[in-house]
Image 1 (cartoon, one colour):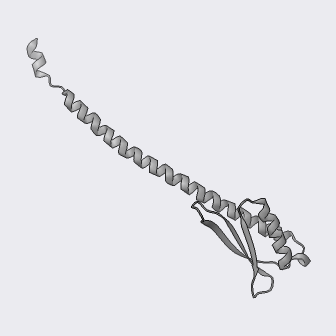
Image 2: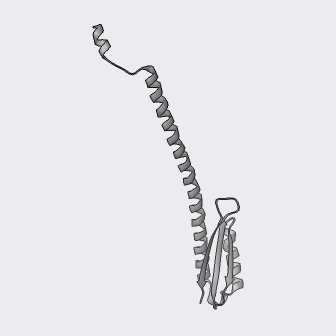
Image 3: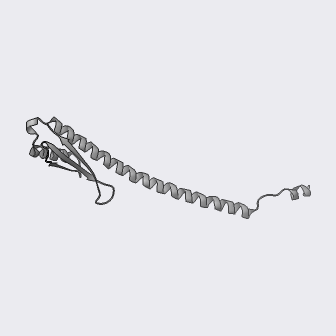
Amino acid sequence: MINNFKNHQGYTLIEVLVSIALIGIVAISIMGLFTTSLQNNNASKVVIESTVLAKNIMENVKSEFTLLPSEHRDIDNLENKAIEIQNLYANSNITISTTDIDRLYIIEVEVPGIREGSVERFVSQMHLP
């Protein structure tokens, strides 16, 4: 019976501890990748949200301008309407300027970006007959 135990080889305690340590090192490095990925995903989410907000504001401005009667589509009335819309969205900035072409306006919408002092800016041209 003693001979049967001598023929069976097993892992020593040192081998088991070394393998657990190696598995731990690999797991820690993979967790670092997950953490970095999560931070990047959160940053992307904020950028996407501010971009969607700016686009929604731009669409709101365009639809409100289109609904104005043609006799009220001068630059002063458009700027007043833009201020009304701007007051609905916190920290937004809407500017309107004219071009050399009659009744072609440049609309610019800005919302705060992800980084301190950065902005998401959308510029569009709109012709109002």
